[in-house]
Image (cartoon, rainbow over the protein chains, first blue to last red):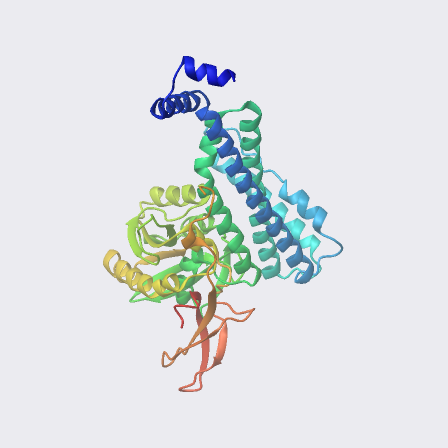
Length: 371
Length: 67
């Protein structure tokens, strides 16, 4: 009755009604658009967070199962594993940067030693390979645990403060975070059975120069072999395989030069390198400089000793994605080792002469790659 | 939608192989990876000359690529 009177007083045709609705929705989106997007972001991040939780729980379970089934852990290692997952390494203060690298090296070495000692005491069958695989599995579980915690922190913070920009940033980064987490989880399958990973292409290549030669431990988890190539004496360094070690190539190179008194004409490093989208997996690139990733300690040591002794640093890189670097080695990467050998031989021939000493280092995780 | 992992990175069926190579005549044999295999491990006898082979590569390829 009332609406009839109102329509008679203010007659509205369908066009006017549509215009009014359009203006009303425009006003609503103008004032509440951000809130709607916030709800959408919260929903998507919540879903991503659930996926991350499943991933970190699976990685934790895989680590425990490996330690129980293969390492024959005494008792239930679950509690110790959970303690390990929350284990923190406090980086040294950097407001006075002098000597910082040595301090980082000290803290990281202490942390790694402690983890290995704890894993060794947990297992009743602590063969070096089993211990190294347990360490790798725990590192994966720990990385996924940290990723989950950080994403959860920003999710809850954004929710609590209703911060549109915090949530939108997290929502935009989430696909990349999930991709990295997925790569980590996939790495578990390779680690469990001791298969070489893409990052091991450097060790795979240099192992060809070391087979049948006498090897000796030159630094922690790192071995050296001396061989010859076209009249040059090659000092070949890699982490001690087939354990899942990365070794200390920086310390090893320093020792060869400073303690053994070798004066190399070149240091040639072979490593995996992250490819950019669009680049082909297994592509081989050449360059100069210390080809080594990680926290920076090893790179600093190598650059320092090379600079002090004026030894040129050459790099040979094999391109791959982060997923390919930490999961079982793909065919394209493995087959690139033939090309790397060709490039390495050419660099040795071009940059050094007969009678010279040459240092060759295969950088990367040496799981499933002996020498 | 935005939080999904790109389709190309979703788990595809990968088969892992070990390549045994004869150091004398270079004859290569491809076989399925077995737990305990590693690069430089001594392999079986060469199908051509009977000398002991060595594992030179361990790699994965998708089941589609390997046929």
